Image 1: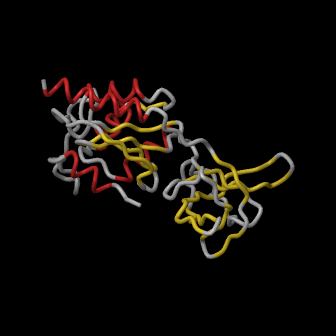
Image 2 (image 1 turned 180 degrees about the horizontal axis):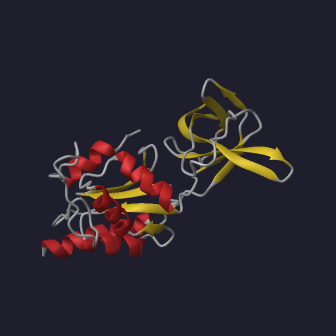
Image 3 (image 1 turned 180 degrees about the vertical axis):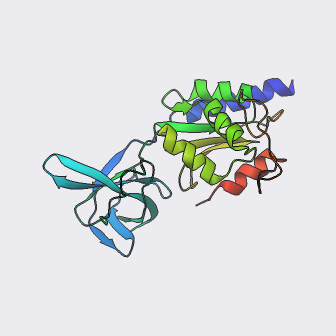
Length: 239
């Protein structure tokens, strides 16, 4: 009976959450100073979300020169923090040495139609994937294969950031006991929380068909996860 109730709670919550979407939002940069910028506020802008800064080099030439994360909203304006954009980094090509400036374009909610997915078991994975029809989830086997190769049974923020960059994903979805959420995959700021049911069992470090994600004695900090919820809560940054 408990299993049936748990399924219904998660399913109902997921159906409600299936409307979740954060479309790309384009806006001009009206001020840039000391590593921060100002843009006009909008209901589409969420504190904690991130995007990119585009610079025009000519009538038909433009390039990404930085990452931008929304830090606050007030008085009809939103403030963004500039960061190095290294998702497309190539050793043969230098990082653009151009700083964001007034007139550049900010594209927020960048790659928010694609998400990594971290869930405790196969049943919850199937429920979430079938409920969020508008979201393209990166299969957890991709992340699992990377962790297995790197001997990392306790994935860190940087591990997920790397896999988001390689998979062209802007979000990470995490399901825990009685709650689930979407977070920005670079800042790990929580963008949206959902109520869900209790978890009947856990697969560690998360559900994946990749087996034997093990540790090695010579790699510092590669011990296995003992508590799923505690580990992933420790990675998050709340608003």
